[in-house]
Length: 224
Image (cartoon, rainbow, N blue to C red; front, side, top):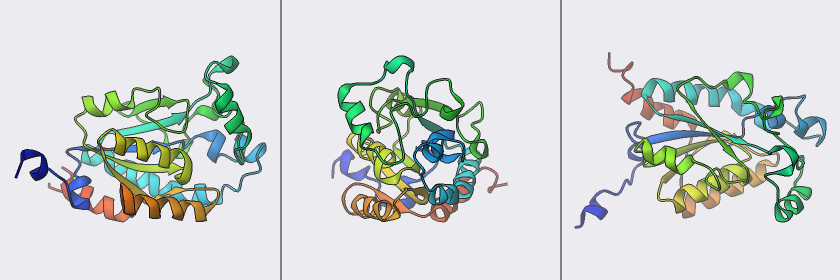
């Protein structure tokens, strides 16, 4: 057997090993999650499914930090004066439910991560301008510089920005793990469909507790 085939990670525990994975927290921002954000105020979005996942995300983020797993907050961003727009993007956003072309404007309160998940100085922030966290960003550079092989994904919306980032992670050569109950969509049937596709084609789908168990066992705190 070649070194390539003997180096394949085949188990969930192997993929989520904190020595080579990173946690991507996607679009957990005020404009998407806060009652005063644009998704609710302007788009009349039901925040229920998104709000429900916040405590599980907080637990996942805390466990990642304790286990030495890098935490990367991937943030939807719109540059002022339409500098990040294109005709294709504007047309697509005009058809997006519960949204708008100026969501998460650079430097605004709406762009910030929600208070319940406030990043710490050691965390990484990646601003994205399209659905995928890899398009036009330094995410791949950060992950490779940190010698990561796997990304664990949590965030909103499962079937849009999380899924787009997950597909691109796979295409960039990363093992991809969804923390299923730390992801949500405005339409949970689309959430479930995205997870079914992921599990059968390109990713591993686990619960937060499954991932916490792996990280807890490997955490330096658990070994004292």
